[in-house]
Image (cartoon, rainbow, N blue to C red; front, side, top):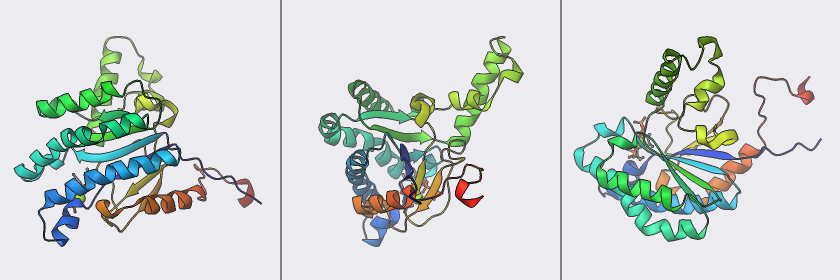
Length: 244
Ligand code: IPE
Ligand code: IPE
Ligand code: MG
């Protein structure tokens, strides 16, 4: 019996392994971040070709501030470099940029450049390229709880009106509507953990892990992961007709 392929609307990637990639080549860790940045362009265009609607890339976590000062400074400057280099390509491909995270805590130059990237691409209607930057999922859930509590306190919401949708609607992914939860989450570099990424949103995401470091992860690799995803049996807790 021919089964329909799973639709892939929202792909999320934990881009891990830049530092080790560079150290293996006897280069400083930031060399890996630079190569990782260049790979973002390649994988964005590949995701666009696949008809993906939202591509969420984990670029900096709320825990990454604990890294050496120089590395943090380099990572904070990467958006400046990235948009300087790739904005024409993003515009040409109708890509809409979103940055999801605690943006108020970014250095001013970084804040300005990410805001500018969002406003410059706001009218684009193609792939949404969503960077998680200074993002942490537990913090995001705490913020949602605070916002919802405020509504209750102000008498705008009853406690028993709080549903799963109320929580979802107060997360940073709410703006993606029907595509807010990733269908597939890929992590590179061989680590098999979530590292505080989209904890609520991945309740029913398919998970996949690549041994390759992020700078080595190619369009072919992506296509293979997507093909594998398309044939998986997503049950969402139900029993499939063919298994009953
Ligand atoms: C991912 O690569 C990029 C960020 C977390 C900013 P890493 O910098 O974590 O590289 P590894 O995991 O140490 O190799
Ligand atoms: C997760 O990678 C964060 C990003 C890819 C931005 P980390 O390298 O920070 O995660 P851990 O420390 O290995 O869990
Ligand atoms: Mg890492």
